[in-house]
Length: 394
View (spheres, rainbow, N blue to C red):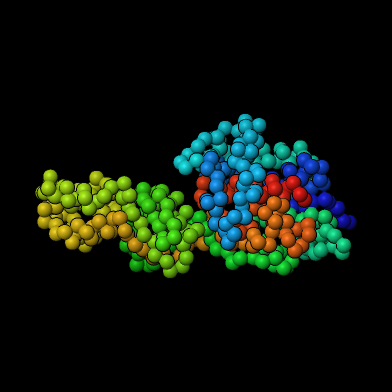
């Protein structure tokens, strides 16, 4: 028996559900297939269970892609304000955190329940626990799909299967493999928004700092972020590090300013005049945690009075605090990464419809596409926007 549909969407993800809702509103017969036992797993776990669903400051500059202009069309046609209108319709309470990040007051379930409710109103069929074993183009038009539970045929096929991040909730390379099957270019992928691991020697030195978070500015030669850096038992994490990880490449040095608000050299010179007998470590405690000082400045005369410090020693202290350099050993990889960088080539898709330029009726949306946002709700907004756009044309 073959199930016929106008549209089949692979992936009950944020982008997949949004696309299904919009296509259903247009009277299309829509079926969403997913191999998982539950829809929207990434929605449910995001933001510590409160879902950072968008950001007040959505802009193309907050996205990485080999085609930096591609995301502009979708983001401008379905904006954060459009999604907030849907939030308001369902009276979901939310709050703003730093940098315009918006979270549910209560639970990420509010977002998922809203999407599922909209999907039901649009007569969308959701089929879970469905693994796809083969997909082929139908002679003439459309696509044939084979699953263990039956065969399907559709005119439009939408790939909303996500990336490789967090495999424990079911992430697979399905979308990339399908793109390659149909001759659609896929850029190499890597983990993004992910903690750094450290070289064995650095890990041993910094182990006692585990659990400390410190306001910092972290940078590579091409990008920098001001946020908290968190020392962990594995390496470095926290918002600043996660943001930077998307721009970092293996072997590259990162520079960390551990005290971006204060000019340490000027302050120490001033204290040398005003309180010459003050010990160096006591002076630095005004700005940095004790464990950070004793660990990162080990070997310096921390118990000596300021008056005994030579100019070159002050310069060394200033450099260690404002320009601490470290080469990560790598990242924690897809296991803990929030997103996947790379993916289906934007130049192979229409920025208006998200349809493949070379395979009629084949669409790619969400994380599977080579568009990756910053930390802070940008990736969910890309999911909503790209899904909405495809939903107008499938």
